[in-house]
Length: 378
Image 1: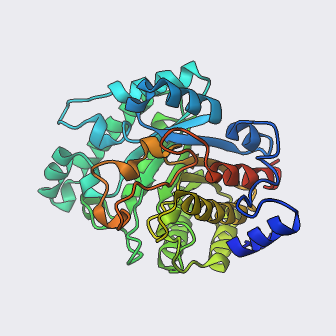
Image 2 (image 1 turned 120 degrees about the vertical axis):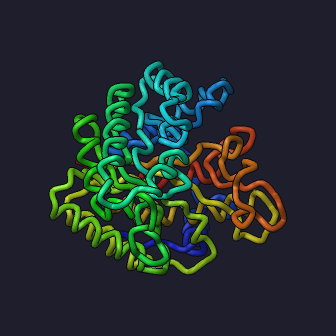
């Protein structure tokens, strides 16, 4: 039976009735138990746990040890994206990706590939988009040849990758339509079919994932469009194994969310026979006005636990990947992060399980408790 999602107030009330400290609503399970890694806790329930990692942060030995201790899987944060692997025409830069692959092998970690195709022109190699922009639709074979070449390289150079995001963010979340890009202009929706078939041919042992940016937003436009897209792909025998749900929860913290609609969405995905991966979990605190870091951490932890409690109720949800383990290395606090996504008080964002000094935060305990209470996967 599905458990109801508790509000933070209800979680605090439960903690009080259990005789726990009011400021620590997550101490009942994970914090009271001997220290175990998140991967160990997840593995006991038949779930995998990991994080996105940037190769440059592996030079920080303390952070590298944290990743190796907490995770069973890593995702290449940027270095396997086509834009970064082949920034110049016929000029590859595979050093960072190979560094991550070596780290994964040395520490017994699985490696996820993110991503083969990203349906944003600005997220694809500029030289490729420029070439495609001038082509008429009847010359789309030129694009297909480039895609085949890239897929072949990925399969050959990174055979150890266990799971690939074959297509990332094909849908415009506001309109529900396939995003207008060079890929879509030349091939229509069938560029998605082709991407999956290419990766199936060149990485036949890997799990193939469609990945998109959503969680439990109040608007049904994006998730309904995604359901219809998945139905069409499956009807065309596209070899898709799983849905990746990014779960950047800061987009909905402090705003309306639709828990009933989210549950119904996950029920439909399960009925399609697809596995689910939470691929990019984090929770920005930009919408929390209080400046106190303890208060902000408590709010993001409660919100993360509520989301995971609901989502992990579905046994086909097999993996959780955080998009950075720590605030220290967070993409949210890098110079290129958009101003409109930052806090108005200009304080650093605290969206991850560990802080800027790699100390565990309440979010880590929230994730551990959600995993401990998840139904056992068979």
